[in-house]
Length: 466
Image (tube, helix red, strand yellow):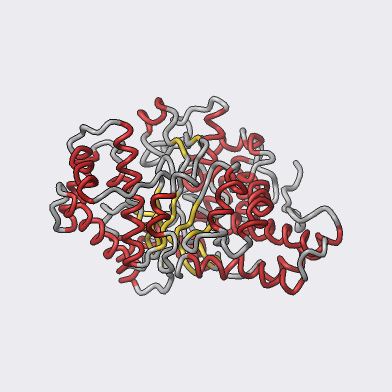
């Protein structure tokens, strides 16, 4: 069996002079603290600080990058323990995963997993059917040790800030418990209001009613609804929240007169809005959220263009967000204009734009962010969170937006143990890009060192107000 090794020059340029510079830049940033301003880890892990149960529950069950690939090859989600509160036979799941590990060849997922296996658990052999039981036993044994508890791993990863993503209906008890425990780590919630601003969510009217009850407002009225959202944001801010996140199907915004917005809200709550009116309501709510951000200072993230839950059978059997997101073409220039006409020049507003449509980098996103003071570009997301995707982003966005209208990197992951691997990939790719600029005499090396530090650490802290 061949040894599994991570090459020290992985992702660096093949050309010798650029590679030399990339190495130097990387040594400058490799050990900087991790700022993780947007992700989907669970605050309860750190509040309870209980051991992770087993390798399958840790690496397979929560990670849609993993199980969507296996599903694409005909492997049953039931056999992987997906949708089960507790995996009945985690070793069996791990064996299935190991037997099909070859499917991840050439993918960023393979690089993240290999990093965790080698750097965290000391495994040197490539995962395969033959090594499945051995690797399961090694990981399972280490997970029982104190140094592999969630809080210990947080500190081992050198994380300075970690943001989770929560619904306005969440009581944030786990976040409060972390604070009450006296542990000094900075784990904060991000405000994700999709469940109460998107009429396509099942039981939308009931969810809005619950929002009102939770915050002492009559959310059946437009005024009470907006007040409830404001109070929810205040509650999040009290526990350290600095950002909101919006996963709308499109980037469409609207700026209706308040009387028309109120009438539209009434129609939506009554369940009488058609698809076009539901889209208009989501568009209006992006503008309302921007207005609130001007008032309370929360940074606004927009993650549009994902057709979520595309696989109806998987959605009906396993629920939302089970790896069936599919990108589609996304318009930003026309879609954002109503919001930007009103708030585009606000210095107290930061809107971070993401995309799954790479054709928009140079045509729309970079020119927009290169002009409007409120706009910044988020890093490559979901399908493009890869070495190739990161390099394409730098190549297409930098010429117009520069580096300083971007916000560094965020890992956007449910898989806690992949966080250091993902940040390591981003740091290496940025150093590779900068190394090329230096080698081509387009940037001086002292400047490249400053930019590498900013892309790794400075820009993300500034953009997310951390």
